[in-house]
Each structure stands twice: as C-alpha cells, then as structure tokens.
Length: 420
Length: 82
Image 1 (cartoon, chains in turn brown, green):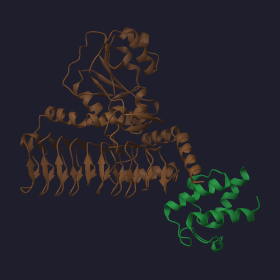
Image 2 (cartoon, rainbow over the protein chains, first blue to last red):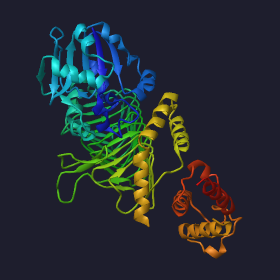
Image 3 (cartoon, rainbow over the protein chains, first blue to last red):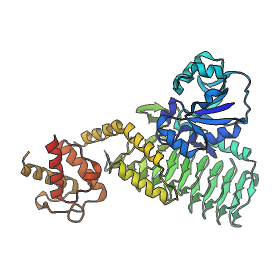
Image 4 (cartoon, rainbow over the protein chains, first blue to last red):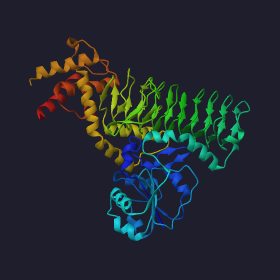
C-alpha cells in the first residue's frame, strides 16, 4: 500500500505561514504536522503532494517522492497534510472509506481501480470526485484550517506529546540553584541541555520538555505546558508562560505566552508576544510587542487571504511570515498578519495586515529594496546559523513575490493616497 | 518636461522628505553624506519621486543613485520612456 500525504487548496488559508513551506511543515506541540502523521502511519511508501511551486523545494527537504503519480499503482492511504494528530490511533486499511472532518477528508483508503477512475492529475478535483462517490464517515479528528488553530491546540498537543515521548527526568546540567515548582515527573531536560541558576520550571499546570542543546539562562521562568526545541536559548529573565512551543534554534527573551516560534527566529529582548505564530528566520526587535486581546473583549478578526475573517476567539495575536524583521518598539495590533520578508518599523497604530515583502516606514507601505536585496539579506541571516538558502527555496520565494505583487502594489498605492 | 522643471521638482521632493532647505540643495550633493538621509529615508525618497513624476522605478537601481544630479538623470530616463 502507498501513502499519499497531500496539501489541498486550503493552504491559502494558512498564509503567510505556508507561503514557502508545505502546510504539513507547520508546527504544533513538539513537531510538525508531518512528523506527527508519519509517527502513526502503517508500513508503506510515503509520497508527498504539494502545490507546483513547492515541488522542487519539497524534494530537496524530504526523503520522499513528491508529486509522483506512482501511488496510482497500488491501493493508497490518503492523508490530509492539515491533520493534527492528537491521539493514539490505528488505521482500518481493509475497507475503502473516507474519514471526514466537517466535510473535508482527513484520511481515507482507496482501492487502485477507483484511484485510476477518479484521478485526473489535479489533487483538488480528485478529492472532490472521491468525496462524492466513495463511502464516508464524519469524525472528530482535527484539521488545521487557520493559523490560529495551531495556537488553539498547542497546549493540548504539548501535553499529549510529552506523555507519548515517554521521557522524564533531568539528564542534562541542572544548577542546584534552579527549581522545579510542581511535579518532577512532568519535566524532561535532555542530556546536552543546560539549566542555569535561578531558573524556575513550573509544572503545576503542565509538563516542561527541554530538548537537546537548549540553554536556559538565569532568572527565567518556564511555565508548562511548554516545549523548548533543540539548541534554543532562553535569555536571562525571560517569562516563558504556558502553552509555548519554541524552536529549534531560537533565541527568546521577554514575555511569551501561548505562542509557536517555528525555528531559527529571534526575540532576544524584552517585549510581549502572545497567541502568535512566528515563522522561520524572523527577527523581532527589542520591545516588539503584540496585543492578543481586544479592550472590549470581543472576538478577534484577522485579515486572511484579503478578507477580514472572524476567528471566533477572544485571544489572537500575530502571524508573522518567514524572514520578516521588526524594528525596536514595534507594537502589533490584535490579530495582525505580517507576510514573508517584510520590514516593519515602529509607528503609532500599525495596520492589521502587511502584504509579503513590504517595508513599513514612517506609517507608509513601501516596496523596499527589491526582491534581490531581500534574498541577499535572507542568505546572510541563514549563513549566520549555518544554513544555506537553497536554489529551490529562492525559486519559491520569487514565485511568492509574483503571487503577492498586485496586493502589495495596492497597499502601497493606498498608502500614498492617504499621505497626499 | 524641461530639465529646469525636473530639477526644481526633485529638489522640492528632497526638501519635503529630508527636511532640508530647498534652496541649499545642489546637484552634486550626496544624499547620505551631504543631505543626511538615513537608510529608510532612501525608500521614502524613491516613493516620493515615483509619486511626484508618476513613474515606477526599479528599486535596486534607484538605490544605487547617490547624488541629486544622478537622481535627476535617473528620473529623466523614466520620463523619456513615458
């Protein structure tokens, strides 16, 4: 049996986080959606299916076939890449059937003859065809539909994955002047991690998992549930409040609550980030802060795919795309979306939406120094962390630059009109 | 558009964005060293020139322009293409 893990057309609802990575690469809890899916799969060859412009990059990143129709030669287990695995499960592979979440396929088993009958090379048409023709059953499995879903489920997933990891105890360096407040059974400190004096790990509301190579500097408090990824540094005096997944390879200071830092991002200094998802290679300048609660306690709306979308949630922070940078003192409004490769400088009240690649300077949207300059900056910041910008990654970024051009121009034009 | 008009309008834009006296701006003045432009102000200058002359400049080429006189020449090239 082959296993097809795909992204459907709803990747657009997860932008800007999903612009230069497949949706199954987004993180929640300890790991990406894909890593969680793979951890529960039965035996079988995995094939990934992504949007065309990410094909080359996905081939480079993963040791699986990508957008390869070889899966047509066998019965197949299809799996939606937006599936958030939050329980132990087993697959019934004998019956041809689709398992749904609010009408969207979560996973399904399809026989070879029906694959060939309904496949025409377009994943979304295929999903529509099989949905209308094969036996199906509604389930309570979770699909990630919007960026704030990843935040909403993060605490639950950290608790689940801590239990699933079956790891506990202090294997690394733990200063005798550091403290665990709560059950020691809810702490894991990996062998190469280092906890400095006057650090408090508070497990009274959930577990704290400190991964390999992490350093937690003095006077920091880490409140569970919390996951600190490999080689991340928590700076002195940081308040890492409940529900955070950080890393790998991040440097985080200040106050952070119920947020996900994807990887390789810095928030070195003071400032508050709450209910937010911060992409890769993001740098938040000192005192960068986001609101995650409106003063009238109404639900937060977020600009998504050009439309103001009601989240139905009281607490929503910011969603910041890869390689974006903020200046010192940047203050984000509740439910702000910032595209990839933006440069945001502080201003009084910032807009709630920043198209990818814009520079926001003195209260105006600007086009910045151009795509080549942005790529050069990305290369420099990646090389500083021993990473290289892959040719395929650059191609994907250039594609997103094209895809977002009209939106960006429209914001710049509006900004100029307002300034007149 | 006559050269003299382009020069006057370029100086007016520079004066507005950088807050320097228009009459003291010379063609040989360098934006950073002589007129005190900060890095982000170069972006504002590009935006303001585009707005003033209704042109769309190549960002990276525009940012290679270092003096007022070169900016005038650069803008003239775009105006000639209109």
